[in-house]
Image (tube, rainbow, N blue to C red):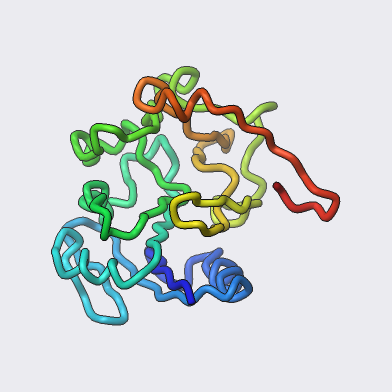
Length: 208
């Protein structure tokens, strides 16, 4: 049975019960860890670890994937700060780490210099949204909360697995509460950027 680790501020945060239920519906086992500041610790069922320790990295290797949940807006100077060291954990034996609604905008200066050289996404610049973010058509806004919104199943080719991820990958809680997708860096991922993609919805309403 697949097993994932969910990382968030606390397990009672609005939206996590729905995430847990989705994983159970898919037959995926999970554990929960919480942490905030890089200066703090990551509390797990196996104990507390320093965010940049080898002990935590080895703990991650016991999972098929690590899902980091955050909901800071792109104009905020805060981000999933506890996860800064994990951007470099990309060896073959490291599990994939997915960042959901993660704020990695240029407003979070703690991330400067931390990204791998081939990081395929453009960091959102709050002062230059036209060139760094793909705003949702029609100026769509959050309907209630960044945790509670529609999602989409995403197929991971390397892992041969499907995960359920938020449709909108970035948000701004200022007025108006805007939604956007991250943009690829075509220079770093020219092959991926040139691949055609067709989105279709089957009769049963599921994306394919």
